[in-house]
Length: 88
Image 1: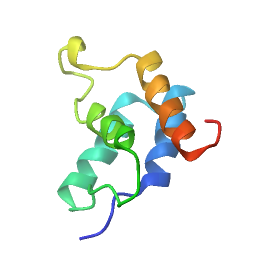
Image 2: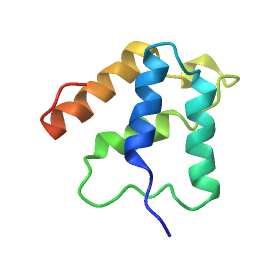
Image 3: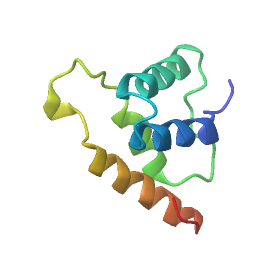
Image 4: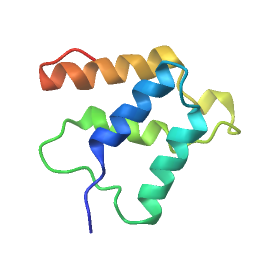
């Protein structure tokens, strides 16, 4: 089983926040990782990465109460980047 492609995921999340990708683009990436058994977060990554990954399991058609706002996604990404010691 391969590890989750963290760098590609983070890039997609940044593109989502910049308006270059849709929620569903990131959602499909996460779902594809689940389907191909590549959704496991590699050892050594902070828990916030899994929180961010789980957030995108909901698709855009789900009840809005289950979707994070862009501000909430930005907060998680910022928290993740701080854990690395670099700006997002």
